[in-house]
Amino acid sequence: MAERWLFRNLGFSLSRGDFLAVVGPSGSGKTTLLRSLTGELKSDEGSVRNLAQGLLPGGTIFQDLQLANGARAIQNALSGSLGRHGTLETLFGFPASEKSSSMELLERLGLADKGDQWTSTLSRGERQRLAIARTLLAAPRVLLADEPVASLDQDWANSVLSLLKEKQSQRKGALVCVLHDVEQVERHATHQLTLSEEESDGWSFRKV
Image 1: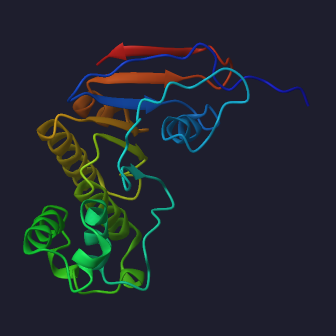
Image 2: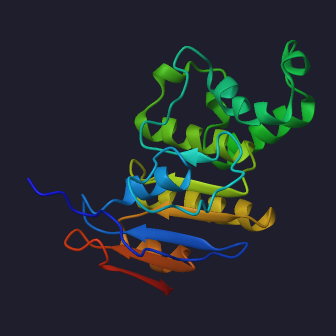
């Protein structure tokens, strides 16, 4: 089977507060693009200028969520702030300010009564919202999210996307998010990057 380029001459730029929605059919490379931006994947030829250079730990939301099932929900959420504290600092618990921030996010995400619950007992939608809380607590400059609302109903999906946009705008950061729902893209995104499955240079970048 002949090899083909997944991306060629792909380029776009973002400013502080921008929300880029990445769209396209299955196999067009949306997840690969996000993993390339984090530096996790390297190109065989050419180079990737890393949009997310300096990305803080926890600044990504991928579909596998990577939650600790043997921990309580509040512990998973708080782990997002580990990058701001040393091991000794959190040995006997997180600062009160971090606990307050985590509880505020859990409440915004409809998980206020789930904080002490074991993560393994949460539904898929609840786990997805918990992963979002953890990532927001990391306060990344650039937040990359791969279908972060795929397991949520329309109301929750819109609430979560509004929250992501709000938080990134407040910290003067940017958001890159893989989405499939056209209405969500038009309602929340500031820019849209469309990838094509047919051609490696079949892509378009536009302001929404």
